[in-house]
Structures are given as C-alpha cells and as structure tokens.
Length: 252
Ligand code: MG
Image (tube, rainbow, N blue to C red; front, side):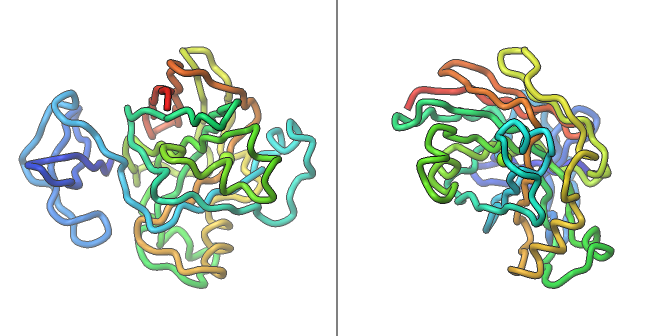
C-alpha cells in the first residue's frame, strides 16, 4: 500500500495511491484501514503530509561521507535530535526561509514511520513495528547550527520538515537509492545501505529510551553533498520506490 493523506469533504482523510489515482480510505493505517471505491485524479486533490507525528526523531551524522564533510568523527552511538510538530509540511508546500538564517540547507533522508506502540524491542522485532517508509527533508539553518549548543534552533523552524508524498510498506528500507536535486541539478546521491546505524537498529535503540507511538517518524540522516538554497529554488528528494518530495523555498 502507498498511504497518503488528503483533504476530503472538508476533513483530513487517509487514502492510498493505486493505478495512478488517489483512493479514499476508511479508518487509519494504524487501526483498521480499507480503501473505498471513491477515487480522484492526482491533480484533483492536494496531498497533505502523509502522517501527523507526536515526535520526529532525527539522526545526525549517519552517513560516513556526511560526517567527513563536517570534519567530525564517525559516531559510536546514534546522534539524535527532535523536530517539533510545527515543522511538518507536505509535498508541494513552501519551505519558509527564516529572516534570522543566512544559509538554508536541504538534507535528503529516508524516514521510517512507526505503525504500532513500540517499547524495548529488539532489532529482530523492529520490523513488526514499522508501518512503512517515506521521504524527509531535514531542512537546516546551517549558520545557526554551531551557534547553539544543540540543534533544536537550527532545525526546528516552522516548515523545516517536509514529508511525503506517501508512506509505502512495499519497499525494503535497507538498500534504496537516495538523491536530492536543487532546480534540477543533482546534489546528493547515495544509498540507504550506507547508513552507519541501519533502520532496525535505530528503532530498537530509540525504543529502549522512549515509547514510540503510531505515526512517530524516525528520519535516518543525510548523505554527503549538502549545500545552501535560495528563495525561489525548487528542492526535490527522490528515493527509489518512494516517489519524489518537491518543495519550493519562499520568503518569510
Ligand atoms: Mg539530517
């Protein structure tokens, strides 16, 4: 299934992409979910972020080449930070360039969406708690990152977590091509097989710290090749089997 959220009859509904159409669903992917026969062309509906999370846990420095481009050592345990729910935007929404930022970066990332309540699970069990995968852009005010002891400010602005366009349970997250482009020019190109801490390890590790709830997102880190964006730029992230997440940079 390729789960989406969209606005239908004035309320936000789950649905799924099938045969090039958006089908309305009943229920949610976290409870009983089934597709109805109501369907729409993709350009008839505006897709929302495919999930609304209680927490988005993001992993820093999880690709060797990205740690090296920062001149930082390869981490021995996952580097973890969180993004607030107010950072969340969907496919096609604008990323707002904050006035206090002077360098705004994209970060292409594979995101894991938790399907059911998860606490103290092993790596072997982790897969049972994953609903599926989607694309995240860990947008970062790079110039603010070193000024603050933590990354909450640099990575926590409104609109700094584009997510989508859909959540797929049809892919294996352990070996997917991941690419980012700005105005059509390729900036990052890697494979999720290069993750230092792979997906099931991260789910297990984090579940031993805090309870992961249905809809929670783990964004697994970005490969090397980061750079800045300007107002008007179009940033696209493509992951094999997960489509393209496209957003435009807009003035505050
Ligand atoms: Mg990141």
